[in-house]
Amino acid sequence: MTATPTAAGPDPGRTVLRLNPHGPSRRFGYDQGQLRTAPRHLLTAAGQGPVDEHGVVMHEGDVCAQLALTMRNVEQVLAAGGMTLADVVRLTVYTTDVDAALAAYGAITERLDPAGATPPATLVGVARLVHPGMAVEIEVTAAR
Image 1 (cartoon, rainbow, N blue to C red):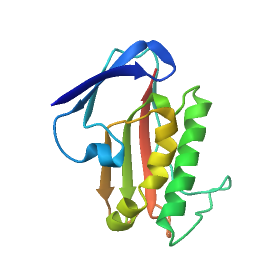
Image 2: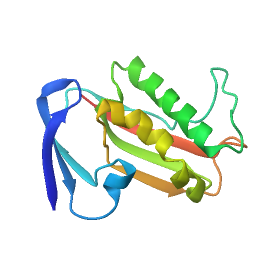
Image 3: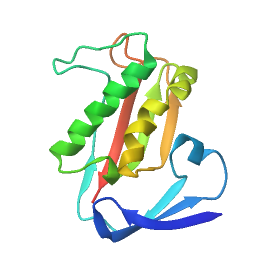
């Protein structure tokens, strides 16, 4: 088992023990588990989707573009709570097309990598999402 302690987000006094006993999690940029000290603030976000500021679904048929826009929307919710991707402690991706989401997963990791974020993540295939044309939705929990 790999257990790597690292600084957590913008608070250098807080550490994260990254737990990766097996599997391909590192290839997709997430840890299988993380042990953290208790946070002072917990942000729980509703699922975010590939919508513009008016709630219109964008990039129908392009899962990669939908993931990128959804991550931008996640970042906006985090910023409204005074947090960043570095504070994300759990990430869940819901998709109507698991194969396309796996192929386009780089749209997620390219946002997480600069923040040094490797939150435990789950990819869930679903029959449909709330809006027609919406292929992805992302939920996060963040803590600081």
